[in-house]
Length: 229
Image 1 (cartoon, rainbow, N blue to C red):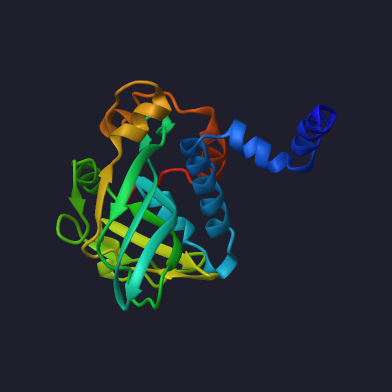
Image 2: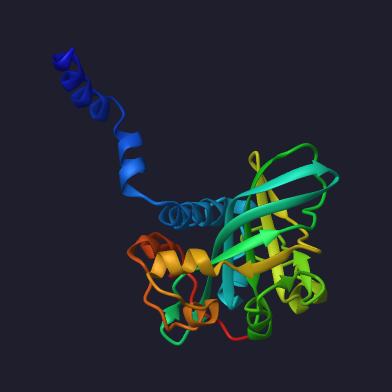
């Protein structure tokens, strides 16, 4: 019996290497940053169904919420955690954990998970987002983002919106409304990531060193130099 158990202890890690690495290598916060990087990569490389690059060039902040939970019929609630990074004088900031709660994401049937990306288009929108609790639509103007390689079909409303949002669910990608949703910093998660109590404002203003796990995120965002508007 002892020989069997010893043999089993050797076989299991070899048979399930992915599980072992996942269990012992990445905590939930590191996983979230990796998943956010992967989500952004996929949505930026979706050809004619991608987020317009010229809008990202103009954006002050980028938020990514992989696997946003949603439920309901036509009008439903949602909940999820993601990351927010903003431009600083030294490039993109370290990622700050954000929570998305409540509101509706437009037409939906049943329950499921949605990947969400949103752009904060100016510093006024960034400042509002750094509040302890920020209501989309009530505290800032928001619109469903246009889809395509470029935003040639921009309207005055799109150009004036402080937040533009997109989602992907079951392979379908498009602009979404976040009207009524609340976004707020997750200070507990940020403390776990950075090893100390730190505010979202300190993080996105560039006062905190980014974790190594965010390297993939910066690889994607480095393609988009800031353009004045």
